[in-house]
Image 1: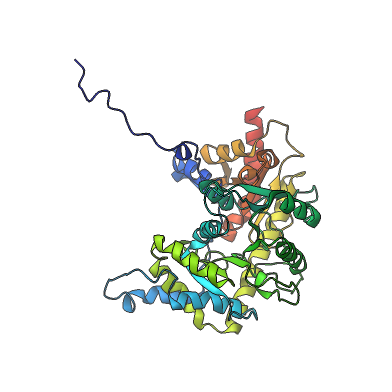
Image 2: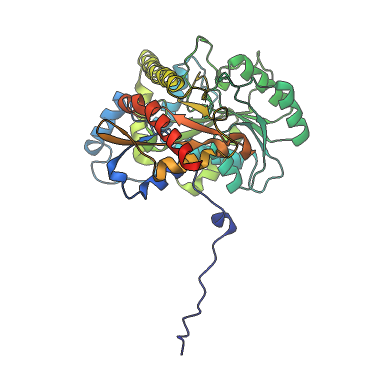
Amino acid sequence: MFSPFFFIMKPNISDHFKNRSPSAIREAQIIFSNRVDKNEVDIINLAIGNISLPMHPSMIQKMKDLGKSTFSDGIVKYTPTVGTDNARNAFLEILSSLDIDTSHIYCNVTDGGSAAMELMLLGVCGPSSNQPIMLLDPAYTNYIDFSKRLTIPIVTNERTLNNDGSFEKLDLNKIKKIIKDDNPAGLVVIPYDNPSGQYISKATLIELCKICVENNIWIISDEAYRTLYYGDDTNLSTIWNISEQEVKGITGRRISIESSSKVWNACGLRIGALMTDNLYFHEKSVSEYTANLSANAIGQEIFGVLKDETKENLLLWYKAQQNYYKKIMFKLRKDLESEIPGLIISNPQAAIYFIIDFKNIVNKKFDSVLFTKYCAEKGKIQIEDRFYSILLAPMKSFYQSRNLGRTQMRLAMVEPPEKMNQTAKVLKGLFYNFIKSTN
């Protein structure tokens, strides 16, 4: 006879979980972790913006001193939900170093910029909202994933990557029409754009703000990469330096996403912030975040030392970061042009990414998801006495229309220079091996 427990059913999981795949910026890493030969392959991880540079010197020193001061007794308590005074003042001091008046900006510290994104979506749209959020395609995957998690609809304005590597300029009339037709609650813009590397100038940002005022919606600016700009425009592009004279009615409708991860090389601290010039929105965001209790106490302590840095030192730091990434990115772009003729490569103007597109050198069967999986699962190239492979982020998940990213991938310029110098050769070898294996 069968045991009475033989037919006991297991509980169901939600449809949301059943349909959930790993994020496009993490999936390759998960696949690679299961490789039998992973310890024999030197991986170049360009799938995620996981910075491999040291933090600001004052943050490094604070991290070394933690056990001697604040946490010497081994007690790590929750901080206030809004964040510690030092951490909040650090975010505000960073803005002040750029000659921005912070007297009417309110800061809620969060567990990374990602938590700030989700908190923003809750405050602007709310779960199961009838009002969508508006993104500019291609858009950072977390905005798409969090919107799905909260069942918030998305509307987008598509940007096309041209054959010369430029992105088409934003069509303001098209954006106006989308807002009029679809009535989004807010517009998300990334002036130093992830994933495209496109720079959205202050002049264009002013026009977008005017559109938001005219339609009485929020303007949300993701400023995780603020100051990482490689062009000649010295007019900082941020919603926080746009005055009432430039856009009447802008005050009280601005929200920004902040992060310690990129400019400050502190991805693992998981410290971000949701900032706004709307006191009521701020108070309610803190109320909502009480369910999270507080952001990381140790991360806040380390990041908070920036509140005491001088403007001069902060400006020197920004310049050093710009010079480092500019050299890395422009060299890799030149190497890729040389190694893979016909490859479309976006022109990096800002942030730490650019996009490559194989559409002019592949057939209609080529799929960036399959190529990414091949590189992570089994692809490898020998250079001298070492084997290499690359982790990439397929662009399908950055677009609402998945077909737009079928032949595209995002590259993050985050590995040390010695690995970045091998990238073009490794990518070339992997690409041509993949093409041979699929023909």
